[in-house]
Length: 202
Image (cartoon, rainbow, N blue to C red; front, side, top):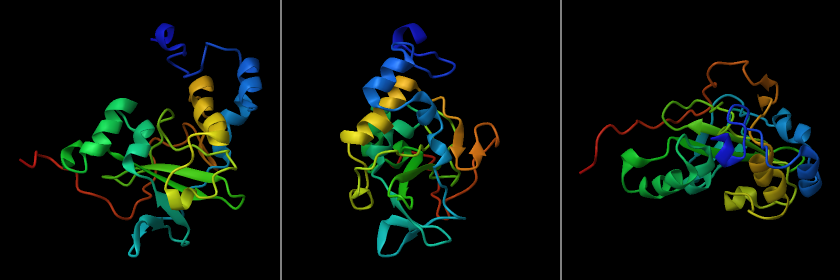
């Protein structure tokens, strides 16, 4: 697999370009990339959707978290991105095809975005390195809480998207104060959970 993808299968690290070349291209070091989740904040307690806007959830300190459209969470599913993208659309009409993971973003005090991925059925934080939430280093997304997504160009593309493809997913932390390997299962962060469909609706 590593031969065809250009990545070390076990570490998720790119083998196509040297770190120095990637850093020059992205203006971001591997160290900064892999330690980004030192800044990734988690919700306090459980989150619930607000009555006035079901895409805005609030935690126990009333911090708002924006639920992204499910196709925008395709990179954070256990299935491949193309399959997840299709399922995210079909799941609106066929419940058993719903993607299992929901994506939320929330601005830190500096305006950059924390990001969490949660299982819609268990409410648990996803902690798998390759598909978990990662802190967004970009500073050019002031409308993220309105748009429900971050831009696919500019700093976000370079520092938060391309970096994942080029450096890989060898992140050192799950979130602020939570190292990789420190927990076997993510904490429950969703106060509202869905019942998992168990049969076809027709």
